[in-house]
Image (cartoon, rainbow, N blue to C red; front, side):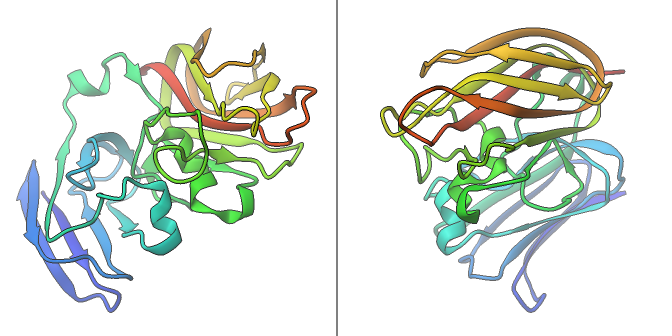
Length: 263
């Protein structure tokens, strides 16, 4: 069955399209306008695909639970969490193909997905949270899995992060779409000191009912946490205990989960 990529305007009119069996490439000339959306149609749902949403963005190995995935092209404030060169200019390159087994079962960061978005996109991994500071794009949960780890400032790309709006019960959920096994979690906590605070203790809760309490320290470096789990479909990052510091602003720049999908 064919895979297809389409660019539609706010009225649903087609601006560009390409379709092919297996790998499909859409190279098109034109400008994105507010209200445009990119639609990937998969020939088969419940399958792994490799998708590139823009020539400035890395490919994503994702698991699709539906046959159509849409991405609204970001404009205005929503654009602040993306590279300003993304979705810009007159020439664009997008791609989609079924993933190979060697890619699916390779040891890698299972959390990264730079085309993640709010709601239930049917595209995994997917990050969501019970709070995002002021609802701003630069503090959205998706920023914690977009692949960028610059953490010594805050705000617009490349310093976007998950911001918790000073909420004590803040919690981020990371869903994998399929069972995974992993042996380490890596956190990049935001380190724009003295603007930022930091967490001294965090708790991971997993889909199998297990919990792990982890102590952290004030650092701009990666927090590498050895932790072996198998058969996990989601994890929650919560019960966040901030340090006794005048700043009320701890935040998460990136979460990485290293392992493989279960066969």
